[in-house]
Amino acid sequence: MDINGYQEWTKKFDLERDVRMLSLGLCGEAGEFADKVKKTHRIPPLIVSPEELAAELGDVLWYLCRLASTYGYTMTQIMAFNVTKLESRAARGVLHGEGDNR
Image (cartoon, rainbow, N blue to C red; front, side, top):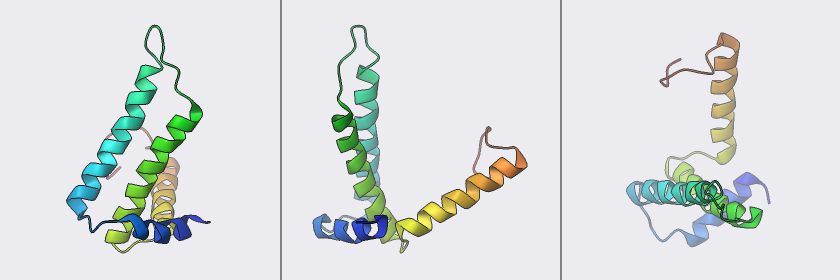
């Protein structure tokens, strides 16, 4: 399955969530991923398997796909926008810094 096929497949599990709920879900799942990574840096560290991290990233991906769909974009389009933005920043030497308009 490619990314756009996965995006289409995610509709099957979207229970009429709105942008607000999808946005909060994305933040929550990203937070769960970050929390697992954080716990691996404790003393003593918690052992978190790569599969556990992958499962959390999968949840992040689901929400990201649903949000892209909500706004009428395919994931391929989202990736293309991001590539264009980052290539432009790299060409202008502004990969580091602050703000969207650099």
